[in-house]
Image (cartoon, rainbow, N blue to C red; front, side, top):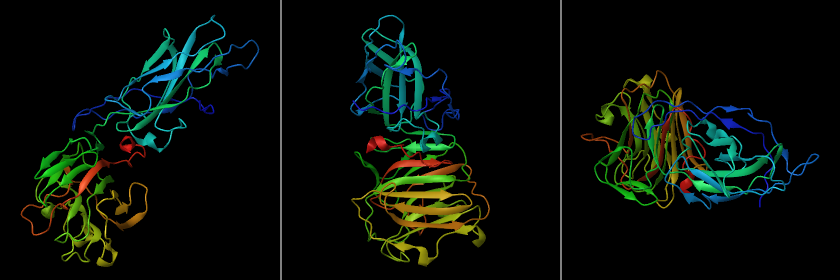
Length: 385
């Protein structure tokens, strides 16, 4: 049994409204860590006249179980006590971190940490149901301990489960895993779902379109992409894009897109690049790298590359070999004006029908879509690993 050092108790405000459906619901109340609500019990065996308690044993969910819910029931085999007098209760902790601390993922509006005290002991086994939605598509860890009077047992060995694989679209935040043959967006053209990999855009006119719940004047649009090989027969192929409305991307004054260019007039060929307009086609509202800052890369179609586009007071494209891996490209351009598409649409690929400029990058397999005014939570999607 692994013993974790006691950490300061934390609780999380468990009140918010959540909508799974595209564009439904209202913005939730953010979780707010507060101080302990009950005194910290004395560890088992310490103090005069203390009882001896053994830790409970996790029963379910365990061993990385993939759940179909965001509100799991956690069950332990009861611990034991050297004294049958007095009431025994249980404390349950859930976290997206193995040390049960609060980390950067607190930025998400889903729960990533829960501390529940005072759960009455059951007959042989004790259960607790998480009362609000945990962060989806995430590895979650949980543990429990027995409390009797001012004495508590050691924590149980931590167990792990994976929350429901599901996407959502609500104010300021969209997530689409795309690995289980469905999307919360609209499919146009030829798109194939590759099991465990994502959605493959088969042609230049293939794309998935999302209508965001509200305009994001700044934020992050990031994805994981496989299937990118050098030598595509064209120039300005798009990995993903954003614009105002649903017309031709190239004619839109709020056009923004990131590109893995082809081997014909790629300027230079097989290069990474981007372009953004902030409400006008005028040069002082057009932001893109010079040709010398379009870096040539021969990408490996069998590898998953992380493409992260941020916009606001600057536009910047970061491309890594996997999330947090080696950097292949990282370049930004200061902006002027405000990026304010209304309605705000985002695309995997691009809608460039009727244009002389290429659209979606054929063969791109995209998953783990994140679009928000907040950075991507660092544990979101790790249930897929």
